[in-house]
Length: 161
Image (cartoon, rainbow, N blue to C red; front, side):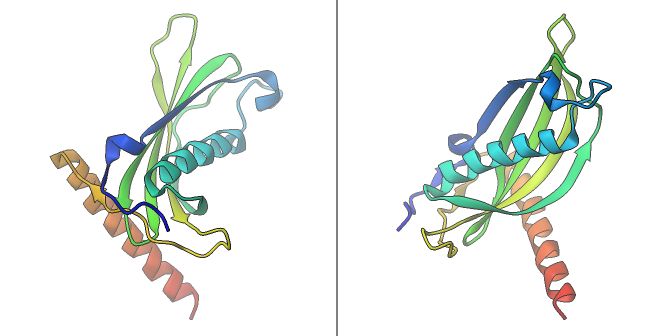
């Protein structure tokens, strides 16, 4: 059974930094969106697993925005944090920033919301700890995440009819 003690947003936050190399990109030197999504998925997994203390699987990607292209040679920071926690599911917000090492400031290049679900060894959902909200900003994000989760649930129900 997973640990059901309380956890803060900061306790599960994760950041992954990667140098983009030629194998990540197309012939024009732009990094493939799929490569960015794979890294988003990995960092969301780390964040969700830290919180749940259990294996997690990706249930959905929601609102993926590619704001600017990422190029070979840039360093990309994938910063993930929980925005909402339900019974077994968690919404993870991932912000993607890119930086050319030749002196430019980091800039926001992408954002995504990933829904992760904690599962047991048989792949069945398991309960996750409640999220301790310490700031007004965390409470605002949690409420926004709750509304997105409800909208996803309504969409699934409507599509299953």
